[in-house]
Image (cartoon, rainbow, N blue to C red; front, side, top):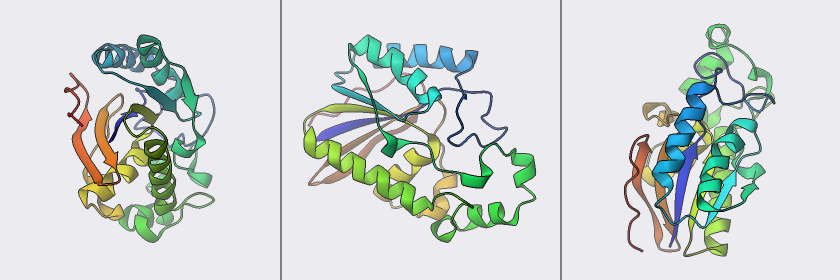
Length: 204
């Protein structure tokens, strides 16, 4: 059984203001840096074997102190990158409220492609595919995946029986940890969206 620590990056100035998507140059702000320092301390007692990050600055800056504490090297994975928000990248939420495609996307994510970007099911497919690959390669390991809110939601949703259109009904907060066990016998969510003390890992 592989155990995955699903970690969202820390706070940035863009959160709640716009969709940064995969735009370069979005860094953790002062609050985010404090969050990830606390997160690294909270995770210090866990036996992390591997740590992976999406290629964006905010995730790499989140992964770095965790990796340093664990004595590990951060491996970059494109497959756990942020949603490709295409034409919406950099757009403020105030402007998106007037966009009929945005309204449709939030009502029917299953069948609505982001203009110039991804379908939600494509995000889910790449996340599931990568978790399955890592679990096959390292079946008895504890693996930290530092990614983004929507990709983490897309990974968690099928194991909770939540349709794509309802992923807005649960939160993945900045610098939060959710724990997923994954093996050929199935998958289980052991905790969701923890932002304080991280519980002990389940016994394999």
